Each structure stands twice: as C-alpha cells, then as structure tokens.
Length: 252
Image (cartoon, rainbow, N blue to C red; front, side):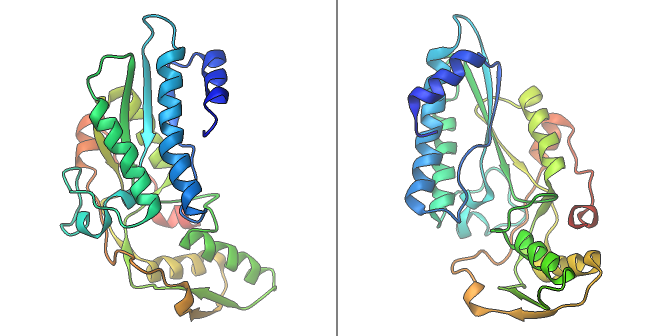
C-alpha cells in the first residue's frame, strides 16, 4: 500500500470495476506504520485507480472504516448512528477517520471513482485475530483444551460492545457496493451490546472446559470506551440488510 508504483501495476493489470479496500494494519502494529499504511495507502490506491482506469470507465470502491473513528465523544449518545461527531483517541481510529474524511470531501467529484464507507463495529467469527480480545480468549482456550495450561488471562470484562459475525459484515459490504450511495458512511453492526464477560462465558461453554480466569490489570487498555452499540438503520433502509448469524454461532 505504501508503494505507489506497485499499486499502479496491479490496477493496470486488473482494470477493476469494483474494489473492496480492506487492506491495512491493526491497532497492535507500530503506530507510525499504522497511520502511514492506512492513510497514505488509501491515497495511493485512489490515485492509481483514477489514473489507471480506461477512458470512461467507472470504478466503485468500498472502504472499510472502523467504530474506532468515533472515540468517547462519538459514543456519548447510544445507539450511535452516522450523524455522531467523530473524535478518535487512538492512532488507529484517527487514521481510519482521516480516510473517511477524505471520502466525504471527494464526494461528487465526477472523476470516475465512486467511494462508499462501511464502518463496522466489533467483528467476530472464524479466524479472529489473537490480538483482539475474543480471539485472544479463543487462543487461550485452545491451549487449555490441549492441556498446555489451565489459566485464562483477560483484561477489563465489564465493558460492552456491539459484536457482529464477520460473514454478516461481508454480506453488508457486497450490498453496499450494489446499493449504497457514493460519498456516504454506513454503520455495519448488530444493534445490540454484550459485555465481554458474557461472551467469554459463552466461549468457555463452547469449548467444553472450565478454566481458572484471572483478570490481569496489565491487560486493561487505557482510554477504552466503556459502552458502545451502533444503529444499522441507514444500512437497512438502503440495502434491506439485517444480521442473520447469532452470536452463539459466531463464538462456536
């Protein structure tokens, strides 16, 4: 993403009509790399698409944002809809918001590149990264089931989040490319909140084990939003999308 020449080559070969832009780094990576990859990478991709498309061709792109764009200020009124004021407090959230701002500013330019933003909240499901809380719990439970240890360490469990199955999110992304309006942001979420403690208990039940659980103060993240739940009303009105997969299935 940081290599403009490489992206130009890919665009020239593929001549895409549709782009799902999910590439980037997560919050666990070095902050400078996160910011450069997300913001500069987006700028490189847009430049390559605008310059590399054939004359008269139209390219539709969906950019994947993040609820981290909201920050504590944006999460003051629940459920959070797309009108909330974004004031991110993390490097990752700020980088994602910078991309969203660029999309909003470029709306209606008529340059052959139409961009929409999907703003997912917390995704869960098969293959979840171990740097995220539920993925970390699942990795530890796997080790416990193998007899490698009997202790599960966790951070703050009383915060509540809006969790959605990744397969439901992908369904929303496809629908937004087909039916979403360019230059608009759409929240992709379940519209319900659950505590990490509740979800950890469900994971333990799904694993069929009963480990000791230790709340480790060192795993608590400073500046975490205590409660967050989104509204997918705008997405549903535009595309007819509603969540289909239960949290129990996601966790299993």
